[in-house]
Length: 257
Image 1: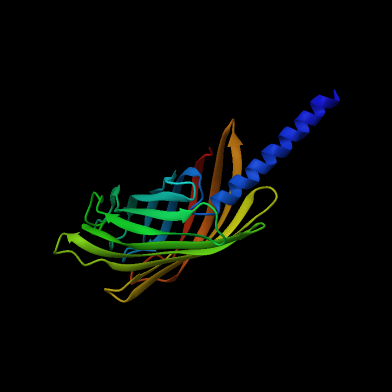
Image 2: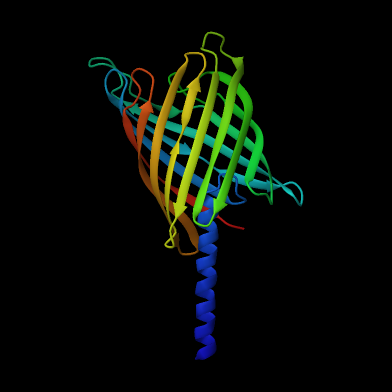
């Protein structure tokens, strides 16, 4: 019986170590982990009609090894939008469709401290309605830097987009995105995260600053590791008729090598 018990203890320890590694990689936006986050954001008090806007971001993250020392990490954000009651009473702005896609590529060394990555970001006009997109093609630089120490991860991601083609009648794209973040992972693989996803519109000289407070839990169904998350967001700064507050929830599917 002793060898069997020892084998079970060894297996449990290995599983615990693997889970800890997965939780840590999930806190790193440019880790070498294939994942598929489905992130839903439900914003309230939007528009003159104080309506609601549900934005579900499909966000596949795929790393590619290009040499012994370097990875390219592809990060895609495709929004699916459903909004209701944004217009004043008597008018209709209820819509459903796709938004514009943001596609980033990070060139990142496989071994570095702090962890960092740089590359291009592209704006692709995939919106199915003019309300949901810019009708512009855009591109610019993106970068991320972070540090992981014990259960803590902290860092920042940034990009800037300029339009270079598209509908000339639509407003130009000239926007900076800033996302400082910090997270803490407990021994139960519960992660507590705080970040902002701030955007500065240089054309209109306007900040949009949502503060996100999110709790995530790593778990498995059979052999499939996943992470569920839920949280709240508060808009510290917003344009006129922007949302006051919102909720965030979703699920991340993990595909470790």
